[in-house]
Image (cartoon, rainbow, N blue to C red; front, side, top):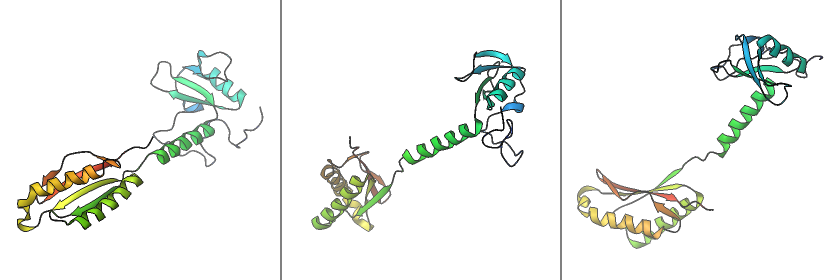
Length: 192
């Protein structure tokens, strides 16, 4: 077969010559040191165990690379494929997985144990918006000075906050007092 479409000879890692191999990269062509390999894949006439030189000749004939998929197997498992295309597809999959993963954003709503009704409703409306956007909400009550005596009142306020937001999110934990601060986390309800 003539020159390779990407201008590389089988066995070259890149157009820039030999470079250091990344730990995730696989051995290809001349880097495979085993005497025998197990060939697998779709584009080979007879899968099974053969000598490395025969596998390299077959890969060269097809204009592709011999890639060592599993080096720890006995004998090592190899596939005949276009290595550059394989690397491109791996990077593309990794990029898609990264895009599909969700980042958890936590928004904090703070109020005191004696917050009046209007402020409570105002903060409740903000929390609804955050939960609808898919953010977690951390509701915190700060106790200043002697207001720590009203810890039970603060707990009731947090529980009421969770009950009022039931249709938008669920409480991940009960109110927890840490020093002079009582907190509770609310997670958004997943939409189907």
